[in-house]
Length: 474
Image (cartoon, rainbow, N blue to C red; front, side, top):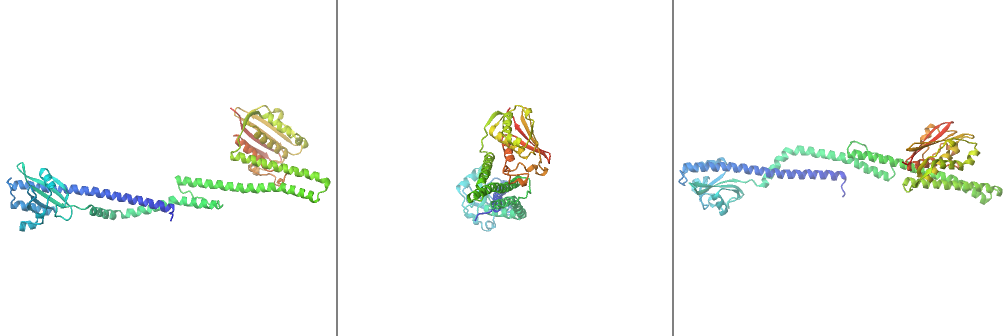
């Protein structure tokens, strides 16, 4: 069964801790064993040196072992919990510190079989090692030192003590370690559990939130409880969720708005065509209604074209084709194309005679569309016999263009929404055949694609002014 992240992390941490403790115990056992071995060697060496010194004094360098020497060896062996015996150069037992030897002259050590290798090294210098000597059931620490008479070795003193097995030593160290460390280890595992739970809880919450988002629920947020990488991840996740929530809202609004905007002209077109087909509309009025149908089709075409342009710009698929052109010339071209509409509403146009030549480097078609939408918007909402004013200035870095119109204006609470898709200030005009609510959003998108920006000022029943800033070529 697949383990959860919390269990994986906790068990992995516990395994690392247990392995580290095992290695530590092994190292402690080796160090402890080495320490005991060195201590035992020094103790046995001192005992051996004492025996050799007494031997030299009691035997007057005669090479014979007297009774006093036996008692000294016996007491030293008893005091140090050592087996001490003396052999000749061939390994034959000559004296032993045990009671059995004192009573019978022979003992269990009489059967000790000392290898030539040990004897040879013991006679030449000294032997220190672990061996059973053929008679001990367990390995023993053995120190073999030559007895020298004059300049000649006459025998060998063997000092023997039980060597504590590594296994027994490890068990002993483990018991000591367990008794002293059991409380800290329990506290450490509890702390690891809590720490692991706290570290993995935000990840679990993110997993649950991601599953909820996959089901369309964007309401879940991750609590930020730290300022480390996990906390930063939680903040980023919440920001992503907020963005997705906003995008989802925009998507739903977009679908609803598109459906509404497409439904109105299509209903109009369908109704007029059905009226012509079934004869509801009289023959002499069919031409009039067919013109309405034509206008609605053109409106649908403009709307689809605007949506396609927006989609390309927002997705980055649209490649700008910058070229140098005169902004003044383009502006005049746009205004002249709207001459009939201007005359029809008796609009006063101010500022065009003060516009000067400014060369920009931008996508001509897109900038034309942006300026056209602004002029179209001004003509659409200016009051009868109202005024449209143009203003243009520039410096070495940017062009500033303003277009203002008198009229109803825009309420202050709605100014921040007018650059959104399908937004219309006058809700009563939602069925306006000349507006789809995409114009200003398209203008903003085009300017942002060129590194520019747009802003608006308005006062109700007085004026509305749009201002665009466009970078100039260096």
